[in-house]
Every structure is written in structure tokens, then in C-alpha cells.
Length: 354
Image 1 (spheres, helix red, strand yellow):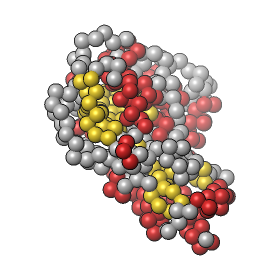
Image 2 (cartoon, one colour):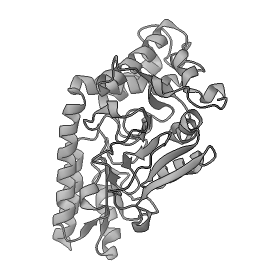
Image 3 (cartoon, one colour):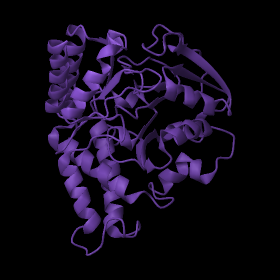
Image 4 (spheres, one colour):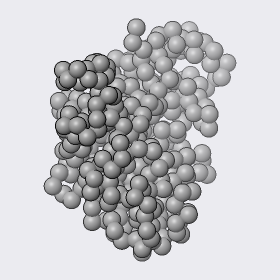
């Protein structure tokens, strides 16, 4: 039986994507070769890479606007370093909203002065800072749009003259935004787009080439752009599966269609969290993530019963991160409304039994 997968990552993927990907591992396009056997320079794979990159820009509304889409490696963790390597000359601003932005700050500190424009660390990152001042003269401002561990999400992005960089690892392609307000977007595929192994980077080309340092080839966005995301051997399976997921999303109706579904899933779950006296939400209401809902039991004595119930219902990956505790329901694009309904029914049943 296919489980209801609320894992924070690697993410749940559409069933049709899994079927197509598994078929390609055996035989790609009736070539007599596996996807993971073919040359990354072959016509078949070059077409896959080109299709994936074009779909990214199409879905984000960034075609013909000076952007390039890259599929790189090293996860968002390497992007913490690459962003600073490519953009930071003297001073950059960072909004500290959780573990991942704190890690990004740590890496950037090696390259220049870092101004922490705001932080929610004082309340264990359960809210998004607002009303902060953005200094002038920044090389860029870095944000993390969604915080998987704490279940918070930026709803309104700040206006700034500085280039805007955003880590969208856990909510990329989940909601409509004016993506042209960002100069660099990066996202580990394994949260909402594909399997672990590749990282999507969307770069506005005119933001590059302004630092005085020499950048190692493997860390230079301009090198990867010039080589059309094929400077080194790409992770062929991860790119192919991401391409399939992007095609699935396009056929569904694009970001507008999936946003509507995601809102329904979030409303269903948060309504139960708020109405059921046995649960309480962790994140501030106005900053709640549609991707990662964090919540706790009001009586820890019920933990054993609740854990047994959701596992028996075929639910996977519900335990919260150790820094928050409780529970985390990750509702990425491919998670069905039906799966959320199963979880809500288990929560309601716990209340009836208590």
C-alpha cells in the first residue's frame, strides 16, 4: 500500500512521475539503454536538460527576461557558499529566519561583512521578522522563503534596491509570485521537485561578474551558464525526474493550479490544529507555511496513542525536527488532499477517544 508521505524531504513525488522515471531506468525512449547508462553528452540527455531548463523559466514566468536556469550539484548548502563567492564584494544583508539561513550566514561571513537585517531566533524562529531596516550599499539581500523545520513562510517580500537572493528549497513552484523581483533563486530539488542529487539555480545574468575575486570554475555561475549546465557530468536521474515533475505541473495548470490545491490542503490541516483542543500550532498564525505545518500535542501523555494511530493509518514522516519537537506535516505539491484528510481524521479520532 502506498503510504501518505508527509516527509520533509526527500519529498513525495507524483505517481505518474515515479512510473515514467522507473521505466526510463530500464529503457530510455526505446533506446535499449538505461537512463543512467547513457552519455550525458548524448542527444537524448541534452534534450532532457534543455527541456528541464526551459520548463523552469516558463513556469516561473521568466522566459526572455535575462534569466538562466541551471541544474547543479551540492544542494542548497553549496549555494550558501556560491552566492557569496559570486556576489559578495564588501557587504551583504541576511534575514535570519531559521537553521538554513543561519548556515547561509556562516558561509557568507568568509567573504565580507554580513548585516543581519532581522532575526526571529529570540522565539526559536516561530515567526518571520517584519519592519526591519535594509541598509543601503548592500551587494545583495538574502532571504529564505520557507522554513521547513519551524513551519514559517514569508508572505510579503521586501522592496530593496539591492539584488535579491532567495533560497526557495522548500516552496519552489508552490505559489504564484513575481519571480522577476529576485536576481538569484536556488532550491534543492528534493523538497518539492525531484529526488536528491540536483539543485536548481535561476540566475539573472546581469547580476554576475561584479566581484573582484577570482572564482574557481566549479563555483562560478558564469561558467555553468556558458556550458549550459553541463560543465561537469550532471546527475542525470535527478534532472530527468525533475523534468518529469515540471511537465506534470505544467499539465496540471502550472503554479496557479497547484497553489489553489496547496491552499486547500493547508486550510484543512490548520483548521483541525486550531479547532482540536489536543493540538496547538508552533508557528505564528500569520506566518504559517503552506508547505510545512508544525504542531504539538497539548498533552504529551497522548503521544504514544497518537503515534500508533497515524502509523496504523499508513502515514509516514510526521515527526517534527528535534529542535522543535512535536509534529511536522510537509504538504508538498504532489501530496494529495486525500492524504491530508487521512491525517485530519486521525487527529479527530484522537479527540473522540481522549
